[in-house]
Every structure is written in structure tokens, then in C-alpha cells.
Length: 621
Image (tube, one colour):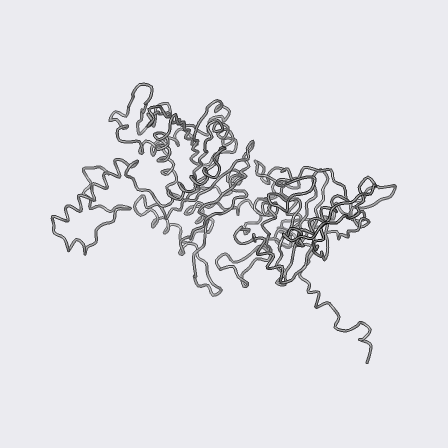
């Protein structure tokens, strides 16, 4: 807008027009005063957006989340990711806060990063210049004041040499430099900065280089973009393991929840704030917080949301989530796109309540040479719902602690590979069969209540060591779960090897040590794309399925859940793509789930199998 053309009577995104009833009640003179006041407000917002500009509700949400995040973690480089829909205001928010940071802090150093110089000038330099105070915008575009201030700007060329400096409120100089992803990240060495702002998605290599530059000043890496390319490696690294702290509602006309009869009863929920305390960027394990900006929260430009909403009618759910709400979808990469924390992950307390209703336990083991064995315990309730209630190794909670090992750490971590990299949990401990049987026993006591506050006193149990000597161990008298059947990967379990001049299999050796395993059924193809679509991946997806347009209840429920104390299994369900083949870092938890679906196990009511009268009585007439 130009000042000479503004009358105060124009439509405006946030300054409401006075109603016709109000206009009819006041004199013409008073009407002119109203229009003049409205015109003045419009001009003030246009001329000085730094002090008088409108701020959407999403900005307050981001400010609050950032302040809380730094207060909770005062030391260490933090990652603050803003994912937003198209025209959601994420770039405007960071532009204004960057300018405020330059003026409000002593010797503040900022890097503003974009894909190319041209993109930087259009997407970052224009809004940053807009938020500079009016006194910094000389008519010539050039403003200098000794060594403390340098602002040379033109609309077509951006800031001269891609840098500007301002005098901060402490009398010193703060500086902003613009960098481009087309540069070699190795050229970024040497600088010490307070803030890096990456607008649009950057590679993991670039993020790694930026994080190192922030260490000495305890800085923050800001990242803002719309995840239009879906669940990329960068998005995967930032979001893998993220926990949702706050949710919001979508527009019911775009994403509705319906009842069994197809009637709309509410709108879908989407995340507003998430937290990931283990962002796995190569060379770093950083803490990150994620805030979502929804397009409907930004009224600029005039008619923004109304136009977008009309455009998205009839679009796919993935496109709506990404374009309007900034939520990346995994359907193009993950082989389990239905898996969702809020639906499929249950708390320990909820699982204990379900367990009280009765059920049956099964154990699935995936042994392997060169890394630790991975195993899960599944509980099936009377509705034939399966709950992955235990895993070993695990990490990040009290029950994950293993005597002699400690907390093993994650089984897999995000990386440039499609299925991640090997985590500390996979690195071999050098265990033999007897030690693994001890771990199985320990886990089954924990699952049976061994972690309760009123646990019984311990006692000594005889133990045969792998070297043939005898010893003992402390064991609690806690009740163990009763496992109905155990399954082991058939290729490893049936592989024959020579031991003490005889040929034996792993299944036979475990049997001799007192634990019986079945060889799990195998399949030639696992993806369900061949052999009639009976692959185990499709079978797992069948158990994860529910109607996303209806509330989750007993008439619309998945058949496979994971208890929150099984983070490795949860991570694998979110991240496994199969693209790394047999060497995939998170494949082992998936292999255990494949054993479960292929074994065909289900709930068995033992009371129904108990004879009503002695076996011989059937012959009495």
C-alpha cells in the first residue's frame, strides 16, 4: 500500500470494518474520525512492522515454546524447528525475531541461510529489511555510521555483499550474514555465532556444520520450512523419536472424524508442539523442539486461508496435512504409514489395566552374529489385540537397565541411510547362550511385576557359567509371566554347527539349556507384493489399520499396539523403509514382528480347553 492511496476504508486482514449499524448511529464527522483512526493504524503497521505489526497466535506459541526450551536446557546448542503450512508466517516470525535479537543483544552474530543467493534475497533479505526500524531505511538505501553500522540495501540486489550490521542497544555492533546451501559446508569453518537460521530444508551435512559454529556461544539453530518433499532424511533426523506435547484441531471441512454411519462428529487432531531430546545429526546428539504453524492462523494476505481452503477441497489427506498444517507424511518412505504414537503407543499403566482382563504371552527372538540378539514379548488379550510389552535390549527407562551393561542405548539412530545407523544397543557384549537365558529370565520377571515397589526379598539361585564352573546369582521372588510359546528366526535357529564333535542347531542347544523354541515360519518375499499379497509386511499393516476418519473405540481399533517402554520397536515401526535390505539398522524389531504375524498365534482361553470331566468319563454310559 502507498500512503496517498489509503483512506482507511479498505478491507484489512486484522483491522475490522465498522458495521453498518455503527455507521448509522454516528454523525458524518464521527465517521470521518473513525476512518482517519483506522487509516493511521494501517499506515503505522505498514511503516513500522517491528513495533506496530500484527503477530498471529502461532508466533506466541513459538515464543513460549522457545523460552521454555531454553529455560529447561540452559547449556548446550539447541535446535528449534518450525514446520508450517504454505503462507503460515514462519519466515515472517523468524525475520522479526532475528532483527529483535540483533538490536537487543550485545555482539550478536547471525547467519541466515537459504538455498541460493537469489532465493536468499527474495525469501529472507526482503522480510528482514522490512522489519528494520524506519531510521535504518535511508532513501538512498545506504546507511553508514563508522564501524558500528552498515546497511546497504536495494530491492533488486538485497544487502551489499550479503551482510549488514546494526548498532545494538548496548552501543556495540551486531551482524547478520547470509549464507547459501550451494556453498561447500567446509567453507563455514572458523566463525562463532549466536544464531543460525536455515530457511527451507538443508542437508544433514549443512546442519552439522552450522551446529559446530554455535557451540562456543551456546547458540540456537532455527530451521523453518514447509515439508513439501515429505519425510526426507533431514525431516527423519529431526522428528525421529519426537514426543507430542500439544495438539490442535484441523478444519472439520478438510479433515473430519466420522462415526460408523459416516456422520461428521469432530475434526482430526494434529501436533502443535513436539520435543525430541535425541536429534541424531551426524556428529551430534542434539536437543530439539518442534512447533507447527497452521496456515489458518495467519490472516495475511487478505483472504489467505479462505483461498487455500477452497484449493485443498478434495485433495489427498497427505497434501492437506503438509500444505495447510506443515505436518510431514511418511507414506512415501515408511512401510508402516498407519503407525501413529497417539493411537498405537500405550502407557504402562494402561497396559497393566488391560492385562488384568487376562491374556496370553508369546516370545520372539531374532539372534544374529556380529550384534546383540533382539527379542520382544507380546501379550494377546481376549479381543486378540497384540501388545508388544517388552523388548531387549531397550533404552531410556528404568527397566532397560541390564546388570553389567547399564542402559544399552538405542538399537538404531537416524542417519543418512534410509533405515538409520547401528546404535549402541546393537554392539556386542560377548554373551553366550547362558547369559542370554539369564536376560530372558530377568525380562520375564520384570514383565511379571518385578519392578513393583513391594518386590519380595532376593534369594540366591544356582547358575552354570559358560566356562563350565558353578556360581549363583541374586533373583527376586517376583512372579514371572507364563510364556505359551517361543519362536526364533528359522535360518539362525536351524543352522547346524559342530559342537563337541557333533552337529547341533541353536534350537537344540537352547533346548538342552532348558528353553524350547519353535522355528519361525519363513517367507520368500516379505513385502506382500508377490505371492498373492500375503507378505508379512502387509499382515503387520493389517493389524495396525484403523479407520482414521472415525474415533478409535472397540468397533474401530488396531490389533497391534506397542507399550511405551519399547522405544526400539516404536522407532522401527516409524522409520523402517526396507531400502537398506538385510543390513538395515532397524530391521531386527521388524523381523520379530514378522515372526509374530507369520506364526499365526492368537488368544487362547485356557479355561475353555480344560475338560469338564475326566477323560475316561466319556466312555461311561
